Length: 87
Image (cartoon, rainbow, N blue to C red; front, side, top):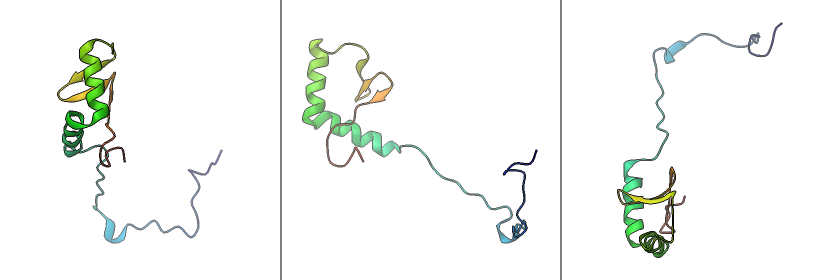
């Protein structure tokens, strides 16, 4: 049974031309500079400092933890409301 993936358009040009051997590389994911910015904000932002105080006092339990300057909730990184980090 023919489907949309197996059909060829009559007007479709299948020649490769100048793009033969060309590669496209797209970087998906946060940069290490972003993590450095989040660490700096975690050390200074009021909402992050409050969470750190609550964590030290024992008010916050697992899955909250502080690791390598980042506040973590399970496998998620807490991003403080500082500058434009959330975007």
